[in-house]
Length: 231
Image 1 (spheres, helix red, strand yellow):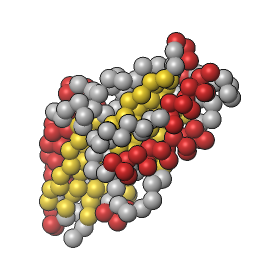
Image 2 (image 1 turned 120 degrees about the horizontal axis):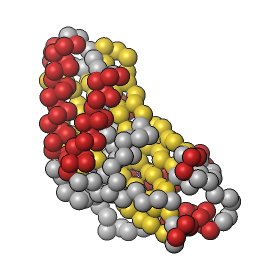
Image 3 (image 1 turned 180 degrees about the vertical axis):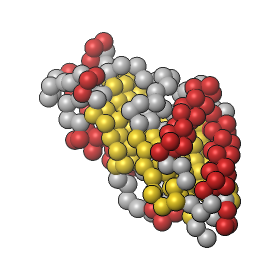
Image 4 (image 1 turned 90 degrees about the horizontal axis):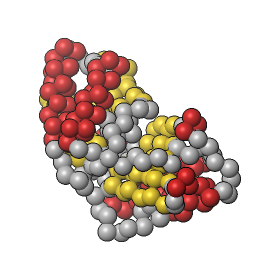
């Protein structure tokens, strides 16, 4: 039986064969147009302090971290989100690895975002909590086409529509949904949809709809696809 995987909006997906792989960055953006800092200035110090304490709250077991540190122009805001099926210890490990790697990749940008397979980290000198954002985004797909593309697309569309509604209606701790559906020739499509849980239901739904529209424009008919955006 084929294994077919799809995902949307702060969405992450990996096929079964990839599930045990070591965490690695899928993609990242250093947003130089949002400002830069100099080494060891106040903003840099605040950023290091914030990231070193991002996962220090051991009471968080739902995979979402939101933290701010500093004042005025030197205030840093960060969000860490883990994939909805990731265990708490794996989540904190992924985010801790991400804080090290992202600051190496973006050594003096005030705003940056990076996605691992299991988590996302973003930080900025502006408010990002509760703000729905669909850019920057990226998508990946496997170029292999599904058999009977029309029926495959119909099953996929229904699956992702259902997952969008379930994820968007989640609570303030988690907005995540995962399920599978049977496509032509007994192929199983696995899908997942997730938003940062600080979003309203309406904003989460809009974000996921936007993400799936990218799937339909870039990757439709392919047996595996992934779209990720800040929200």
